[in-house]
Length: 351
Image: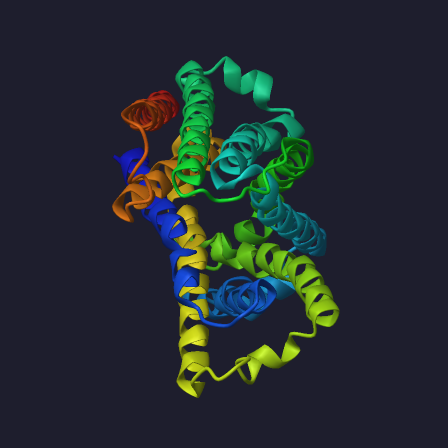
């Protein structure tokens, strides 16, 4: 039952992640860097501190007692993740949203799942345990489903461009290196949480319980904010857009500026929520906690695709393309069920 509860928490987090960038559609007269930095202040800087202060008892004592090396590692790896997020945004420009998702998220799913046990030297031992075959199969099936989902999405983009006579900046030669970089560095976030576990272990001693992961986000997320802020400030200087935080360009109403901040806050809240629930799910995954990253990434693609359908992004595409998407979604669901069953078997055997 604990594993199923963990998967449901992961599903809640993934659904939040799939919705987090929809508010961006409604922002007015803000450049990308203004919106991105505004939401980053909420999700990567303020919310981790606020939520940790509420959910972690004796936070000051924990931060004093926790090993500094774990804090530095989590921060640095979080900063690498921030670079990956920027690379992801740039990759979309050249490879398209769907193909970028297929390559970057597919790589992140596999690398981010296997990296922690590999670095700890535990992978060989894990492969000999009950249920491990199901878990590894679930990761592989998930990567396949993500790939097919991306191919379906790329077909959709090409068909819509043709139907609407839209010009395309697609360049696989430019997009592929960025997708690879985004995939590897995005996977590092899961490793940032792994390396911050000694901080959470101290939090457990003070009664943090299932909220233990919230203390790690203070460091992992602030690292992501640091690297993201550097790039956004660079764009602000280059394009002279700092003034957008105080006044919208043109004759836009002042009330629209307040609306932009509200939308940025909603984005930040949804983004942070994905890992708030990720932490609650991770602590319940039993013997194969490392598979949390795979469950999260697979569900992220699954729910993002469903959101795309709900927003009618697939209107006007060929039936064949829709059937490819349906196949991908079925494979993703199978992957989640396979991972859940593998975790269940491992937990029962350990118990």
